[in-house]
Length: 311
Image (cartoon, rainbow, N blue to C red; front, top):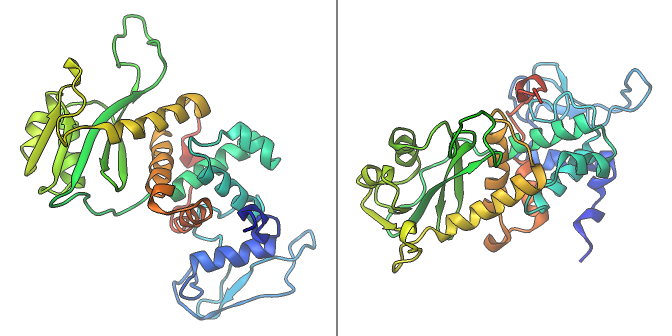
């Protein structure tokens, strides 16, 4: 079987538009302006100010407006050719620990600023909205937290994790993971997250941290292991699955991305969660993972100003 990188939509702009239209409009062309289905048609022979053919241009005969499949997506208003967006999406989706903006810049031949913005737009597409609670009767969900940041405190006198970003993650064994950036790790911050995202009849698995004691009472079962005394497994109770996820996440954040501000962490979490949730162990290959990511581009317009760029 030929490599997915040999597909035409990685090199040909018309093929890229055709492929993206099939992903975004699986049930027929939808006008992003008025929402009407089946009233639009392709416009041919239209050229831009430089005399180049406008590939993928459509006209809706309900509202009389023109559009392309990019409108209303994270690709809107981007001057990067669509086939290069496909290349960037594949590279991000097939790299287990991610790919840096510098590497995208070198591989795609775009500016570093463009590569940085492209990667954040694609992370926005990977974010899952309106998800149902995980777990349920007979299912186990592990909960744990980790910290991301510099090894040494920035401020004089800072101790422990005060200078780092706190992340709480929930993983259903054999299933998916969800991660959230929190300002602090305590009962007040964690309880609403676990209550909203885990079904009450789930078997909750945590370590011995005191803030999980009262939270655990909200669930039918709560099992703990005491890491402080070197206990990591007790029967079926353990948090090894979430620790494995954190291992990949930290190797990517420290080894690939290296620097991450608070404003951007939620998008990096969306990226690592997405790749884990669409992993090979669940029967999803690199090409399918990329298609799933591109299916999430609609309704997530991200401008350069909105990224909170201040680095």
